[in-house]
Image 1 (cartoon, rainbow, N blue to C red):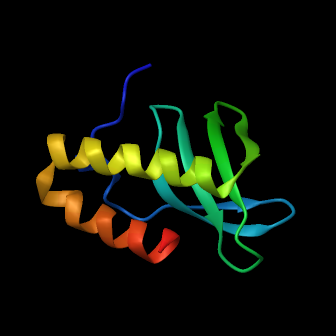
Image 2 (image 1 turned 45 degrees about the vertical axis):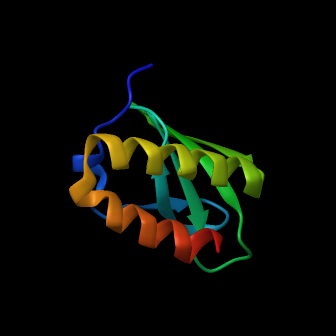
Length: 96
């Protein structure tokens, strides 16, 4: 599984979940997967797999979402230091 370059993931992304409403992307996981969190409901984290005909939503625990986000920070620090600061700010807002 190839990892997405941190340079192209600096833009904000939102998805609309059929039950929980607007979701906000907090970290890329792979080319097809990202971690999203609910905006308006309680903090519910999703591993979202984008597919040609829509998206698959899998609820994940906070610690799993945090783990994926920490992996993204390591990648961005190594591969794209210019966007690492943005990912760090998002991580701090989301998990601290």
